[in-house]
Image (cartoon, rainbow over all chains, first blue to last red; front, side, top):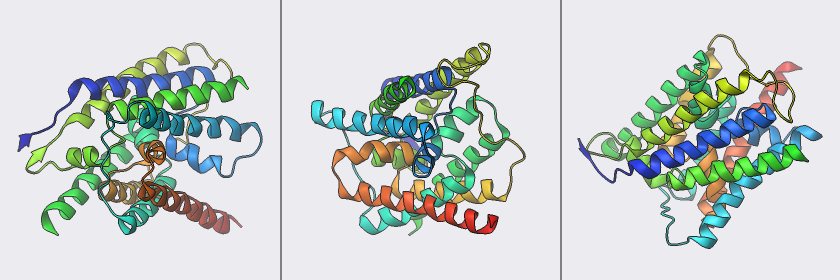
Length: 141
Length: 140
């Protein structure tokens, strides 16, 4: 194994920003920043419980828009799949995170921080499945 | 109103973190998940940074008893791990490994203009709706 393209400073800094955002959400709204749960519930929630979810998603979209408009050359973005792959992967991610009740943010960041047993197990499984899938797709198929 | 503004600001900050750390770049995510051969370990540090900050902030906030605008702290479902948790995480991990996208980065990348991201997001939302439909049916 050789280590390539390691970017420890931006990774730690970006991670800290994610942790900070999750902390403010928890501190001020008393909510866990689980993106899959927020997206899922935004589609079905009613009244005041829909508003904060929609504006959180708006913030995510806004961050992407600001980045691409203000720093277009600093954004590295390369898709790994075509349209068919995107549809299949998206469906798997939607079904999977709904069944599991969380994704990389809700289980991986917030749940692991809380030492939730469910989240620790979920994170171990989706990481392992991710590693295995990439190994199969990139090296065996 | 306050809650909506706070959530918007947090979404911006969360998204900025995903972009700065390059989790919003599927190729970078796949390079992390590809441990055989050439490996880019960066995303392990994204997780470490996020968990480090939230583990502290989470505990400090709990001492206050309630949140600023949202009332009591609202924790996700607890209880024993079940089949849905295991099967769901497995399916999610496969999708994540295929496309290099998990939900947060996928939402952020919708603003980058690549139609394949829109297809991924639409399929993801459809998958969530599908599970909701099945749960609703089986509850009747």
